[in-house]
Length: 289
Image (cartoon, rainbow, N blue to C red; front, side, top):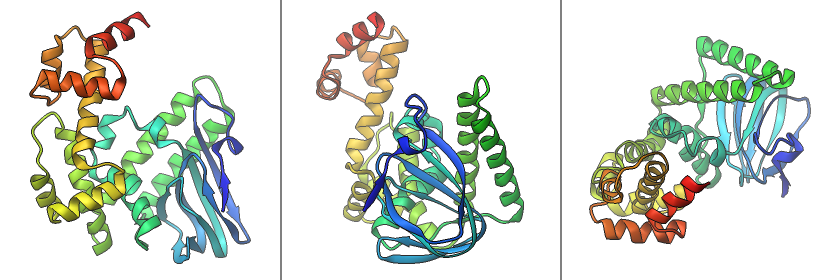
């Protein structure tokens, strides 16, 4: 499989983002993304979307996300025109906690792309006429700014991209098909974890919320996010603790408690395992830097 790196499209290492129009009069060969994900909005025409050995019809108004390790291409194209937005999610979304608290965001940008790659999942967001027109306007504005590259263009494009992501995430939550509901079950539990990770959260509660058994929920979650639900929650708590250590003078014990760790010794041990520093040493290093 041909793997395309993001540097083919942009050499800006400090802003790993590219937006462009794509015109396909002929078949688009099978390829993968080496180090980026891609948000695709179909602007005109239709095609068959090939994902691995599967084929799915797509047409104007369809929106979907392709993971960086997914082999895909387009065939059977007819007047096919799309907008490609290429980005590294770990760079653009890692510190944007608010958007990760949206079930629609988790569904569109994390769960659905994983299912598309691994589960023969053909469902996607489809924009109706009014929303389609609004999204096309946002894309037009973003591409113009990206190409002009005037002062502040990176901030402008990033702000527009986040606005687009929020809008699409909200629309995804309104979809009411069986496949969308399947995605939203897992996404809703993840969004709950993102909102309430400082509180006590049990796997039993999360599995009940998702509609799966505890065993099935844990299996689906790890398959999608790469870690167990408990590890995911611990990571969120540690990220929050790092923020508080950097930006406040709160005592270590108070930070541990406010981030959901009931035992300060356990917090310090886990923190050191992950960061290589004790909480106090981490704070000193960050303040020194």
